[in-house]
Image (tube, rainbow, N blue to C red; front, side, top):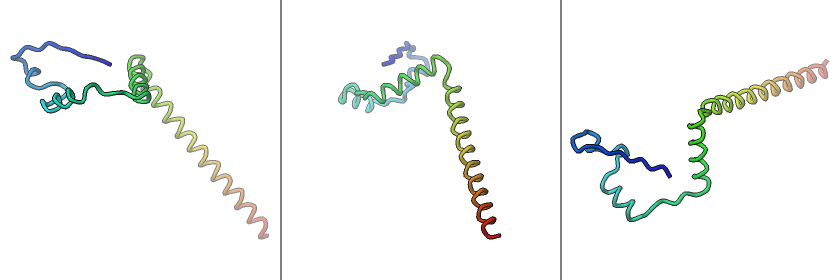
Length: 96
């Protein structure tokens, strides 16, 4: 759980509106419901995102994953085209 606290003077613009855009109704509901429970998947996702931000590897991972997927997709498409061409050659030889 990450907790951020900041003191703001009553004259400042920040004191009139919170950065989370919480209304008084949101505050009442959160006090009624109590703290939210995190399941393992959500907690792991939060931890992983935090680690990527801290270490600065987020962009590299996304770039590598995207390129890996596209390269694999292109390879499979070339294989399909090649297979089709060989089948076509085989059928043309049978007709002769």
